[in-house]
Amino acid sequence: SQQGEEDPQALSIQEGENATMNCSYKTSINNLQWYRQNSGRGLVHLILIRSNEREKHSGRLRVTLDTSKKSSSLLITASRAADTASYFCATAPVGGGGNKLTFGTGTQLKVEL
Amino acid sequence: DGGITQSPKYLFRKEGQNVTLSCEQNLNHDAMYWYRQDPGQGLRLIYYSQIVNDFQKGDIAEGYSVSREKKESFPLTVTSAQKNPTAFYLCASSIVAGFKGYGYTFGSGTRLTVV
Image (cartoon, rainbow over all chains, first blue to last red; front, side, top):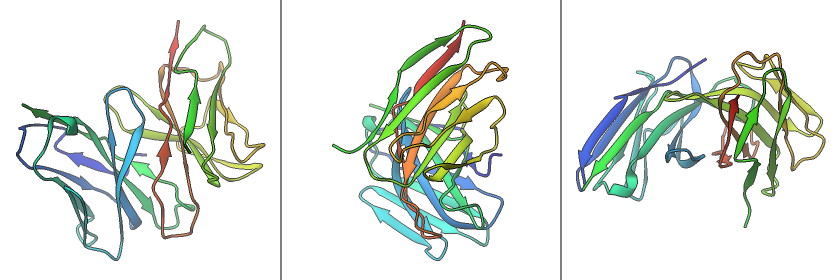
């Protein structure tokens, strides 16, 4: 089952602009994670935010979590062409069995020169 | 360097054949996972294992089988019972640490095509 839904499905911006993508989920979670996937490759872990955290930063990435709205956002600042990829949120549901993750459907980001 | 190795990168299967996808990790992770990704879609969980000699079905286990005889290895067999096996298969591993959670490390994937 798909727990998370990313919005928008696709996003096209110019280099240097900020990119924001959102994730909504349905059940209570222990943590939420964001991953990047370049075309035809495996996923790369970007950042993890726990259910008792509201905001987290890592380099040009900023993630927020609102457990009351069951939503998260990923902000990439000062985007670069190399940021072109698909971005997925993944949730670890409470009682979901260890670290089992459920992935969303992804946002395709294109950063143009 | 530590990581996950999936092989082969491309695999072609004839109708009625079973095929096995390899996944090996040297990260000393306890948990391993298999996901399937269809074009333009998210990942769906096939099977996962949190300890040697134990594994659980995910959301779409029908037509697949796995084994976990060694900590480092978690092969996936796509059987002839899987009606639509053409997809991109991803293996991942992680530390198991209760509710705290840790990120997954993914392999580079195997693209399976039925011919």
